[in-house]
Image (tube, rainbow, N blue to C red; front, side):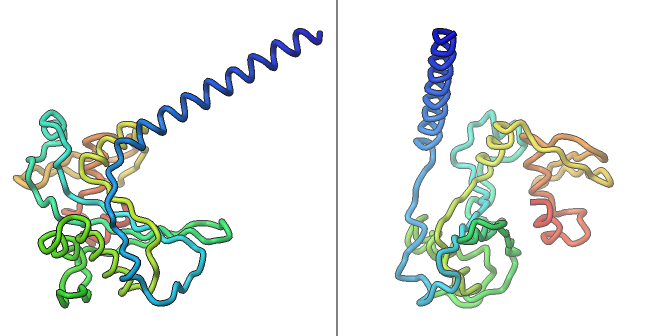
Length: 228
């Protein structure tokens, strides 16, 4: 009986070790593929952190296709160059210090805001102005600084997902179920989607089309925000 218990314990220990090793290997593989930029410049942060130890994470969707393969671009039906500096998705994820429910607020791309050193412009142009002046890192810093001025919040962390990154992530997780009250279909030089009515799984090309669509929606960008 004791021998059997020891064998079971040893087997469980081995399974845990192998599982942990597999998880660590996957994490390391993912970690090495994440590009890092200095997106937050502390000297630009608000003088007072109004929410203390709570964490605010800026999540940005960018129309960049630099890392896409030709095969992937053909699959999603978009050209290689097409607004690589557009940051049409900007969300702040607020994580309370006490661990209670996180909240997300999304900012419409066409908000007319004060961009430091630039003046009054649309919010989604902040990144572009920074890139044109001082490179990609400064572009992200200018966007962070603009949103901190707008909200009064301190941005603690930052993540950006480009066009092809979203496509790859949706494939990696096996898609997400959605349900539409009507079908949508449009093909032009700039827009390409065919979204059926009813319940279906958005994955890869269809997931990208679902979150990018704003044409034919009653409130345009605002309805796109709801989808995202």
